[in-house]
Length: 180
View 1 (cartoon, rainbow, N blue to C red):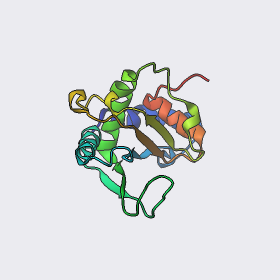
View 2 (cartoon, rainbow, N blue to C red):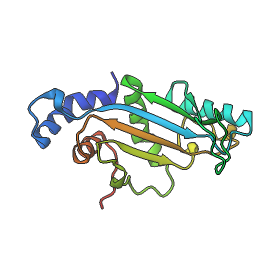
View 3 (cartoon, rainbow, N blue to C red):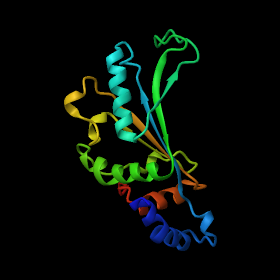
View 4 (cartoon, rainbow, N blue to C red):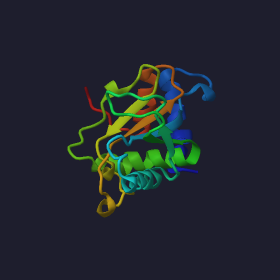
């Protein structure tokens, strides 16, 4: 059992039940999945850079990413039909909690000039998005092998009905939010 999942079961669920005035344990908000997205538009011209991006995402997430392709051509962006445009990984269960634990305790403190996560990144339905400009903030990425720096987005999907319940859940999990 993951350290973060154990913390959730033993301490966070009773605290959220009291704070949100919920009677049933199953109605308490929980993290359902974590999705990691990488846009490879700028590095798509070199096959080696794409392989490096796939390897980086594999190291960060612990599982192989799925390649996403464009559905139609967009001449304004220089995108052709069925062109590789991104990589994505969906984490659930133990891998998800292990990733969140590493994100909170190792990765976020490594971000340069980090002052906390913005509370404006909630989408109105209880989901939270974090964007990174560089993949090298993750300790799993070997900086000496990185030839092309790319960003990535992490979407944390919760079962919360609104942003306040999701914010309470993520705060208790250890996410460092800015104080307005």
